[in-house]
Image (cartoon, rainbow, N blue to C red; front, side):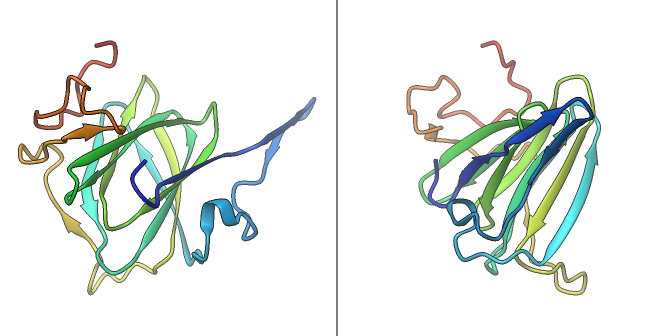
Length: 167
């Protein structure tokens, strides 16, 4: 993983009524370190939609939690040209820490919409947003490594969110 990206499985406690999960605790230092959450947002995304690319250059860190559906979450580091992809779903809950300085985004994969809750370490300022954007299909985003592997057949090509998962 790129430096600072962390994944924490969320424990599910089930009984005959359903289940319960703790999705955020300030004592989860293995996930949060010294970060403090200041805003929580909810996103609903239709199947096949890509929400990418953007980054935050003023120190914001995002924490993603897919509650329903499945999302392929990606991060790209301009300096190393490494790309990380993480598949997260409501069936296997996990918190994903995303340092904002990486280009990041996600695609709703599968056949159902994605319901995503994300936590941020900075408040959104509509007058001066901490967001830099590039097109979701930017042909200049070319990974030299994917998930740490230079041998991935997608390396050296423009990133394709729609590349068939079975290849």
